[in-house]
Picture 1: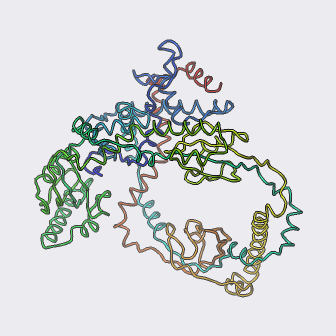
Picture 2 (picture 1 turned 180 degrees about the vertical axis):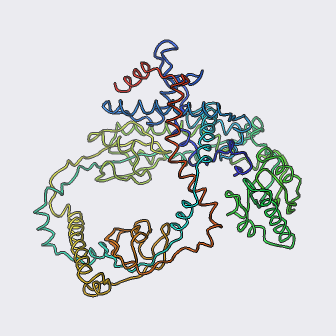
Picture 3 (picture 1 turned 45 degrees about the vertical axis):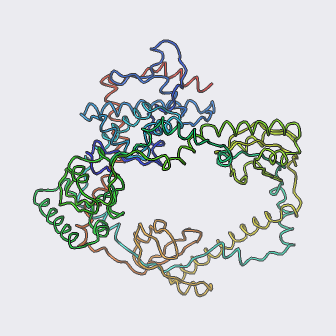
Length: 636
């Protein structure tokens, strides 16, 4: 949210949805505390040295285990996967080392800014620690990994800044983005052909007899489940008021809210601008301030004018902010304003800002009433799994004795009963979905067997298989629906190919007259009005599937091409050239896009060249014998 208020070296844009994935996939290997098996002396545990820092076997083990998410590597593939993962771990640290050699420094303050830009960064310290531990890592491990990622990002920013974009490249990109074409087309739809087919029962039976081997009846298992749902079990756990009061009294730091303000702003950026340009930008900011003072709508003006990508679309809304999240000039002004008050134009290293405070809240301790529900959930969560396990253990014990009484056992224990007649492993289970542990548990059972208690999402369950019907050749009545669907699919596919070929032959014969060809076949010609390369063609779908329309001259036949369930045969009937007078307005955005694209292309080359140089200089030393032992261990 506050990336604009930090230097480029500090800015690491990470949102919660991808935070842990980014750290994991970056091979920073600080993710699973306590993993890794010692292999001998300390030197035997070092797979590489980066400068004076070792990369240890333990770190590599964590790397590999996290990347493969516990999956066992097929022995024949270990020699391929594991060396690459080790190389990636070494390369990640080498990039961080090079970043530091170039002068980048990620201080504790910088790291704090980065953490605060994530959703978990707003959690109280004990909840922050608890969340990370639930993900299998400690606070130092997570923050060390994030620091290394920041160093890598800082280095990659050099590639972005060093990318050169020529005027011709900008002009071509602008034309590609803004050129539009108009298309007349015929759409051949397989689904429509299927709806028109009315096969008789005799036809389907004949098709079945000819293709009987393609329609076996798979094994099915009559299965019953007894399920403990975390939410429902949690609701049944009483939490005395005295326990809630005691928790509140002993964890008050957790419920303290610092002074904070709910603010919004308009930013006019000046980064990279000349003094003359800055003067013009400031004049525009002063004009916007006059409009606001005269009653202008702050949100509307922010949407139209603000250059903060994180808040402009939200009317400049920054949400609630606390001290330490913003650069000093911005923070001082924000916390000095009264609710509803609008600042003068203020200057930061990023540009000119106009700030409005919507609400202010002093530092305070939330009351017990405010946090009672939160505490109740916390206390329940501490015991709910134990109770779920105890209930499921009871269910399993009783089910082993009476495998036919699953429903009665579930009712007695207050648990959920799920009946799965003719269940095929791999298919969806009501309330559990296609959970792999459930499928594995059921697939491993013999008739009359009861599974061990297994976890499916936030639920625990136990399964019993009451009957197994083995796979067998199906008769027509058992597989009639499957036979019909397959028959219709094959028939419609053949008809579609015939129509498509006939249409193309007619166009070739009549010189490309789409209307005449369509009329002779009883087809309708439709029009997709002007669309761009990155847009969508009306009635067709994404324009990226129609790339030929932008490279071939007017009057050209396009297709046949499959787009969004249709086979399209079209004709370019008009072209709309871009308005070159608007290029200056889009130039900077296009330059940024092209630089980012070039930086992405350059990144692997940059990494390879840095690794090669550091190895030649002796700054990166790989211990191949140790690496070989790690690979051999995973191979076995």
